[in-house]
Length: 541
Image (cartoon, rainbow, N blue to C red):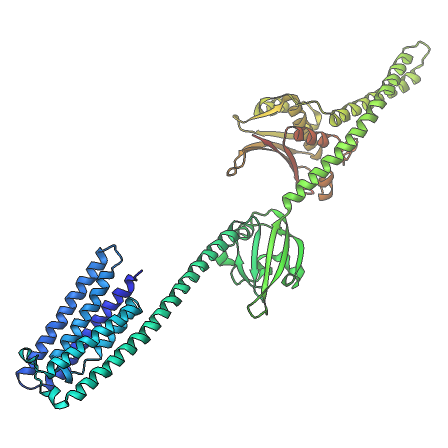
């Protein structure tokens, strides 16, 4: 297929050559010729150059408005050049013309624009045209055109035929060399174009893979300066590729500092990282060394992954398994304990009714009954935790339920100096077992009140959250400004019988966890010593 750009450049090059040729006539031929012949020659050549401008303009317009390949236009350029050179040679003296070399440009043009075979055809035409000029001039056939045969006769027939033979050899050698070079250039250009296309496709594929993988991909040079920084890494650090480029890796991700230069080899590890939104993340990495074409070290490739969610889920699964095992075992024990406990309580109450029992014994019996009732309540709570009832899910307007609980808890002495704020949206509805829902918020609000020394506040808020294509969730937060919890206590908060309160059973939060889990939700605790506690419940909307 012909390259239209080459044809355009060829036409522009011809215009430049014609312009230089015309300028040389003005600066040289006009003064070298005397009389009217010189002026006539200059006039004819000027008109010929003007015709060349016109033909070139028409060719450019034809290329612009023609959708076809343009081979006919290309052939027309070669034919016009042959006509132009032949006319110039005729006007400038035939055998004495210094412009016979312009035929070489026509041959080169044919080899570049077309093919090697067209270059040979053009060379043959050049030999025919140039030989015809010299022969016709020698035999006086060009006298009507004003071309004298005298110069050719003075050179003699032998010189004329020698000149034709010499140019014939030169024309064919030019066609051979120019055709070979042009053919080789076309093959190289085609191969280069294929490689460019392959490289572009490979680059697009590489960019697509790097930008869409769900892990961080970072490359650094031997100085530890960032070169590649994919979209995952941008989201992690809050920096764009342009902002991170050429910065030190340990400056952008400080967690790598403790590994020194280990990541320049085959290495892996984990470190904590504070994200742009302030969240504490656990990041793992694997690294492999990069080498250049000469085998010398060129840097390292690092693959980053966020293990925060995986570790959290693993911890929750381990906790759930542990709680299930402990709960099942303890439930059986509690069931066995309640039977003799009921017998003890009943027997003591009957004994206390006997007339011979004095006041001192009655006081002791009342202590026994009270403690057995407390122990029975503890066992009942534990059985409720260990074997929760199947939830009867119904739509619950959460704001009304919290309002009812606040009205009940206001009469509790533990809430005497505690203000309660219900910030749940009026329209928010959750699908929940109503009794179990009341139980979890009762437990959480009582825990918050008991954690407050003196005056304080408890706030209940909720939001409906939608993130992209993910299902919507309801986030419910119960916050207090009490004493807070240490990180070690937060980790064990949902374990049964773990408590930091005097007289606590350690089953309140454990029961909350089991109930929320049975409803397909999650519970998390965010707390710090002396800074209060926020319990967040996440439920499917």
